[in-house]
Image (tube, rainbow over all chains, first blue to last red; front, side):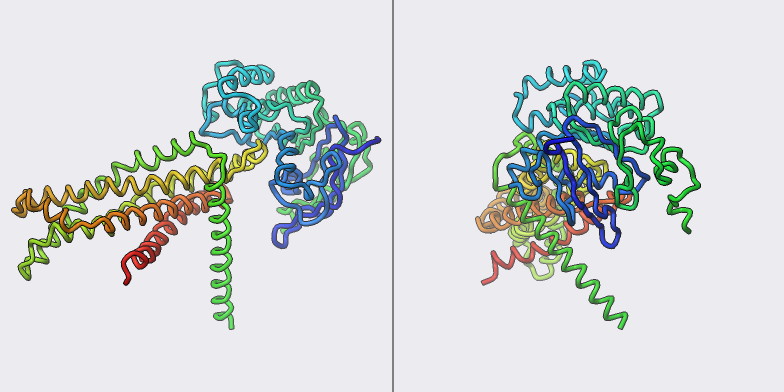
Length: 258
Length: 257
């Protein structure tokens, strides 16, 4: 691949007290590429995304978007870069105090890209793109099922037509059919937008459906990065154990260490 | 040795906490003073803090005013100074009891609610979501609450003062045999402008601390439902302590010669 990577991470480290969560992560994601980061619970996947988004500050290393080092940007420039990001959170993270339509257009209103009186129509249009009707627009997020909340979260993530989207465990807590619906929606909408995406998950069905490339995070480091089709022949015992979900293997769960 | 170490740890933890709170307050204040403002949020918080606290503050004021009149009447009758009841009630209420009791009641209601709401938003990643949607959580969540609480508390306390003095008036004229006209005249003769202003300044300061503690503990809560519960408790306790502490400081500033 040539040219400047859309997202570039070099030697990113992050610790919480004595616990090292990211221990020198290097990753490049090209424009339009879909990279899925896999790894067990507590392996630092969410921390990795939060460092890229600037929600958490990396202790060491550099994070660049379109070749611009995020740490070197002014507050305003940083805000501008962040406005091109979309994010679907694990629990959807919809705002309880706002109806669905305001959740969907929240980013557009915050960036003053639409007027408030046009926001409702825009929300309807985006909700339709994730398979939801106008009947949910005035409901509160708490009145929706888990799958519908994820769809609204997806609608919110794509409403501002971002060129980079992060998906944090998009199918966790959903039944297999709804999980496949969400995966399908992600693939379709990302294709529409031509967006670059990083997804973190431990759901192998999501990996096989969404990914162009897969990276496995273990003990704060990316121990394997490769194209999706090679994951079954990675030759890496850690990856093998993870994708087959075996208790036996080099990865020892904390509970087994006791 | 261990005992000294323990004292050291407690002192260091306290100083670190005070530093964190100071930075949080500074950051929050800077957002209160810089546009843009979310006027819709300020208005809805003002209604929530001011209007919905009226019943609890009003009830507290009316009963406290009545009890104050009764107690002062009983005490002052020991040295034949019953005529001072109206003056002492109004000064005591406007300077101290109105702001402090009103502040403590609002702290219980509002600080807890703010800590629970913002804490839940923290643990369900809604605050992280705000950041990803080009919205500063301090601007969107914290500043409107601080502004609304600081503006609404003086209004609430002014109403509480009127209700409290009315409570003492009703009791004094109906039960203690005071003449309504002379009771009111004494009340207004004794009351000075500075008494009212000091009470309202206190109320504004208390409002700020009530919102600050609710927001601070909610914003920094972690660990799910239990963390939100701890944040709620800490918010009410710390807001109450700060109210009592700042009450002394403001009184000292206003009235020490």
